[in-house]
Length: 440
Image 1 (tube, rainbow, N blue to C red):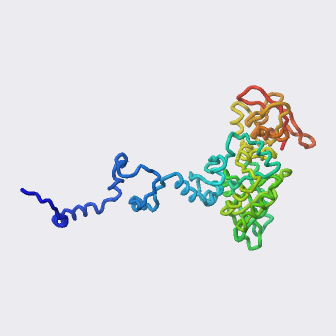
Image 2: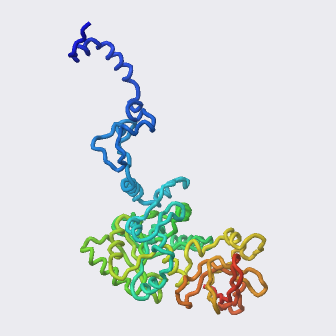
Image 3: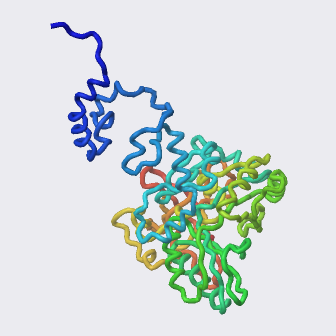
């Protein structure tokens, strides 16, 4: 038998046409992703694609056209981070307020995160907020911080505090009293609220028909959800909007000048903002800049690029608060349970359970270095307080540390504040330090 050397493909396909049609009908209703490369085990796919994981496909992948996929797979870290920032550039506090539970595990980034992450160490704090922890290193840059604070300007992005804009309607005075009562209740429960002057741009929030004003409160992101839920229950509140504003803190003698130079460098492209003097700045001087969260990042970057400005993270801002005798959340707002946990088991402190602890300043009388967590002990050997924020090293001694102590130590007939001499000791190391304690 002689085998032909030439084969006619057309005649061969025509002769096998019934079998080809039958195979086509069998595979027409099956899922296409079960065939081809995706149908093979992962160990057998190495021969079907390149080993270069950073390559970009020139042709559309078949896998993206099935099962509702419309997006290519993220191939490298740059692409994944870009997608991540696109998803989380909205207002995180609106999502928190609308959700009934805090089951959302997505990370939240500030609008200025990219600029700060290139210059400082970042860390996930207060649940899911990614915030700059401080300048790189071990935190020994207090000399540079003090120099900038005395001669230049330090800058801190405080937009992780949620802005709550409350419209004061028909009874403005009554609503204002109700809001002030809420501020006082939050202060007692160790959840401070800051209040700033009225601020609004354009039709940012519908004002009341009677021309009522807007009161702006600021709540820390750790408890902003609870504060907003409580404010929605107030009958006097006409309107409420949260998280719309961003806040920039400037401290130092050149604060106003730096702000003016930054606005001038933007050449008319500066977003709407308002600046007012910081209430706690005092001799240090400084101002607070408030603008819309969606646009304030450009102004923040322009201020950072101005000469003589030091960018501050959580650590450096904690230094400033301690130096000015101001409490820093959450370190200086100890709840009762946490306080007893820090003190240790077996210590009875009934006065603290009644809420009679007061914030105090602590100075070293002779020699020694205070650390956060040290106990304050009186002459009888009883624990009467705790140091919550230790003054950073290499900062002048006129700035004391911050702690809490029993208010019975400072009671006088005339009502004047007095000093008390106590001893600070650590539970982990021997020795003690003589200190002077005075209420803030």
